[in-house]
Length: 414
Image (cartoon, rainbow, N blue to C red; front, side, top):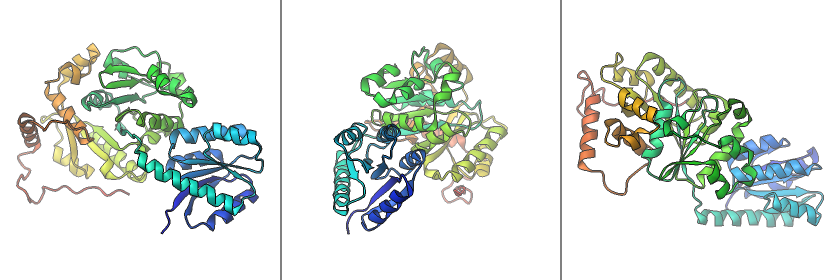
C-alpha cells in the first residue's frame, strides 16, 4: 500500500478550489485535511495538523503569500510548501523559493506535473524522518489561581533539569523571572517576535540571558504595553524555534486561559498544574482540569504539583485527591524562610541551597518530566523518597497493597 500524505490548501478563488480538489482526489496518496481561502485559517491549520505539504495559491497579491510561506516555514519546518499560480515567470518562481517554497505548481493543474510534485513531497518526508531533527521537550508550569508559586517552581525546575534548557517568561503583564535570577534583561520575547523572520543562532543568543551553565532565560518585557504585540501565533513560532536548540523549554505561564496561554499549553509535552492545600486553590485546580478536558488534553500530559505542602494543613490530602479525581504527582514542602531568602538574594534555591529538602523535592518533580541523571539513583535518594512518600499517608488511610481505598479513581477527560 502506498504511503499517504496530509495536505492543507490555500485555495484562492472558487474555480481554483474546485480544480484543486478534483485533481487531488484522484490521487489516493493524498488526504486533504483543510482547504480555505483565508491565509490566517491556513496558518492555524498548519500549526494544528502539521501536514506533509501545503499548497499556497499565490493570487494577485504576492507579498501576503510570501509572509505566509515564511510563517509556515518557521513553525512547521517538516511541511513542504508548494506555491501555485497561473503566472509562472522565472522571477515569480525565484521569489517563491526565496520565501521558503520547495515546489512550484503551474495552473491550471497538469496531472503529470502534479504527480511529480507529490512524489517529491513523499521523498522529502522520507529523508526528513531519517534526519531525526532535534525537538526539545516543552514543560508548562501553570495555575489558574495566583499565589501558588508557579514562577518559583518554574525557575527552580529549569535549573533542576540539568540539561540545555531555556526558561520562557510568558507572564507578559506581570513578569518576575528576572527577580528570581537577579538579572536585568536588555531584551525580551518581544524582540524575538519582532525579528523572527531573520532569526538565527547568533541573533537568538543575543536575546537570551545565561542564568546557569545549562540554563538561559527569555524574559518578558519590562514595558507591559509592549506585550500587547505578542500574539498566540508568535508564541507558537517562538516555541518551535526554541525546540530546535534546547533539550527543554520551560514555560512560566500567566494565571488566565487567554489565547497566548492556550497556544502555549497546546504545544506542551508536560503540563504541571500547581496548587496549594486550600479550598480556593483546590477548586481552581478542578476548574483547570475541566478546561483541559474540553481542550482535548490527555491526562498523561498533566501532573498535579502540590506546593507549600505541610502536614499541618486544614485540608487532608486524600480529600483533595478525591475531589479532583487525580493523584498528586509531586510535593514541594512549605519552607517559607529558605524560599524567601533565595528570592530576596536573586538566587534560585536549587543553586543557592542544593542540600535543602525543598530542592530534593523539586528534583523529583523534574524527574516526572523525563529528567534523569546518567548515574543511578543513590540509596540515600531512594531512602528520602520512601520516607517522604510514607509521611504523606494519613493514619486513617490503608497502606497495604490491594486495600480498598488504595487506588484513587481518575477523572475521565471530557
